[in-house]
Image (cartoon, rainbow over all chains, first blue to last red; front, side, top):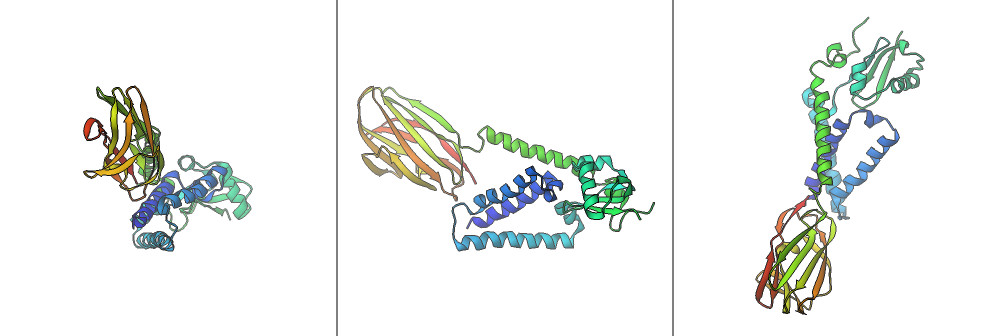
Length: 147
Length: 174
């Protein structure tokens, strides 16, 4: 059944794509991000199962993706090096009210996006009140406000 | 100013020490991805049709069909025979690569005869008078398991007499 190698290729490619396009697209829901995340699911399904409508096909495709997700989680749990490759690492965006411009540019983030999270999470009104802003590996921005 | 939050270090997570390569690597990978997509625009992965032509004193043959395709795609192959001299019993003899790993959705016009000729598909169309043409279409769908290179030579015969051959290969991507 070539559905298993197809699912493996799809999983690895999507993982690669998500790492390459950047974390911003993982958590934000701008129109272009919605297109990326929604459309990918549909396109991948076509490539993995093709014209196979069988229950066996569902079991093989979903089972392969599930197993790979578990193996990936186990590998990232066991090895920090693999975790850094697969998930990336946090990036500090704001330190003591000061933007780290280079990191913001590399992650294609704007001040508006950081401040939006600051308001939502901590009710912070000014960048000067932010002690730390960190882009997490999930793509979300965590905010620690000054005491 | 206190140090970074627990589990973070200023050198690695603010100054990106030992991680700057990833910013560059990500750009390179994005460019590589774009290269693949541009290659697709230039028909590297199919399925834009390609015209193959062969001519002989008695007839010419044009085959208009993709030479690159992907599993699952549907396309039609067009065979255009032009008789310069009378062909009493025209046969198109196709390599098995035209049918193996394919679903043949239809043939138009329906050949007068369909037979095997030494492991190849032989479609008989009968008499084509000098100066006349015959156009034959094969509607095909590549099966998902059909991947790799396949020979798709096409031979035009008059009965058992060879007139000309077009040599083609199709590459099917998964």
